[in-house]
Length: 237
Length: 292
Image (tube, rainbow over all chains, first blue to last red; front, side, top):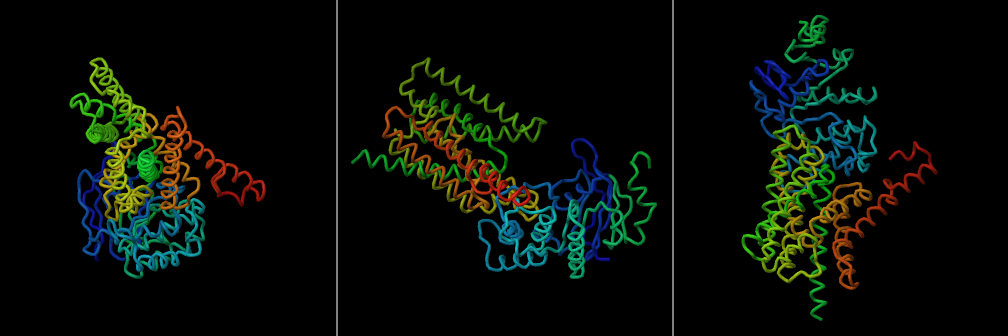
């Protein structure tokens, strides 16, 4: 197995309480991976460690050689983390996906605008390109964020609860899009809540509740026993 | 003839000052840092007063340098308090503002007690008097404003990205800390030169009001900055001209009142976001259609 991320003995503490304790797992390249666990299990913290937003107390994360470039990892945060009343259009936000390639001081070129339009086309938002982001529905906002990640042309996509508060049709179209990205050899990591759909959506699951419960191919790991263990309070285990 | 020439110089300076503060103000209000301007302007006072006390100089560049130093110290202090303690940002701003302003007033009363010559120069910074600026002052304001506008023009892409989504900016290799430091430095310098125009208490209006009004009209960041720059410079020019031609009208408060009029008009009548527009739209098309 080619490893996208080799996570070793990660321990994270936030505000003097341990959020993740000694988590070790390997994330395979070219798969659709679900990170599953209850609220407060440290799923988002694990992702934020991977992208370098949080420094772990202990442990290390080794990235595959194809993920070393600063634009190789596209992060799609939870929608609630940004101010949607910001004065920007859909196109402006998607173009931000190119900023890492453009670099400091420079302006977007023809190729950046072309890739931006392609990304909007892929998520079916091209006709809304000039719409202010404050006028979008929850599902449309999520698609804008996904388009921004697509414009980045990354190798690894990390999405934090992308399906929260969006309609089923948008969810289905996004999962089809992610599957096609996986078929192109990209790696997609999604923090997911809905146990009913997890088995259908993901090739690989990582079950977390402050510590690693289990990780591996969905067919073998996503069992009732593991799920029960994940959703119990850690003290009761 | 000479009077008109001087007035033209002052008008160009105030226009540039309004532009610089308007452009920076757009980022300040979108980062929810509206009180930061107030803090910096008040924190500059001890620096200016101490420089005057030590050097007895009335050179505006030197006094401003003192103001910039204490402004930077206040911003640094804010960073330390918010990052290393559990005190919230607004509380920290309130503490720093009053402590620095208090120190400034202590130094000023000490200067007044010792009757140091030309101490009236400090009143310029306390209450502002752009209509009586000297040629050296105008050159300084001109150069600093052009410098600030150039840096904002070069970095507006980075500033916008870091303001909208700092986590994403970090993941694609932009250092939020570097962007924040550049932003703060520009803000400190802009606020200190703004003190000359409208004084310590009113300068933050020059930063916040144009941007707040512009937000009502603009749906994109570059437009918001342009509108804020236009509103800021237009009000600065009108206020300066009014205070030059009408007797007993002070510059700072005139500019502030004009800006407040523009903000109130924008809050009421701006398309899409104005109260009047929203109400008339709802009356005509119903709640659903007007949910903008």
